[in-house]
Amino acid sequence: MSAEDPLFAEFINVIRPSYTPPSRYILSHRIMDAEAARVQKEDIDTLKSQKLSTLLIDGWEDKLRRSLYGTVVANIAQHPTILGLNDLTGYRGSADKLLEVAKEAINNMELPPQNIIAVTTDNPTTMQAFHRKLQTEYPWVIVRA
Image (cartoon, rainbow, N blue to C red):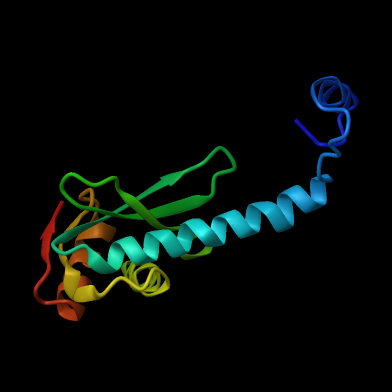
């Protein structure tokens, strides 16, 4: 529902007449961007203290036929943390690009790579090549498909 919606404005006027809701621009740019930054900072602080993390990477195709890849880190008794979501449509999910995306996600969230002990993916040919490249980069990581 948009802040400019007349029914929403009427609803707000009924429950609190003195309140002026933010515009769509303010809501989608200032408020949401500030909240996203706050959550990212909180996630970064949490990840720095977590040891023995498992990195999970998976790809799928959305309704617009984009090739999307998500990177998540998980720990026992912790909620998983999303590190990144990348559109790799032009790259066809190559192993080199997946390695770049994984390293970028780890760096963006300031996750010390030595805190990752395992990586889990599905098992297509691209992921098998990714496993080999990842183990060259991070030899201590256990890779499972």
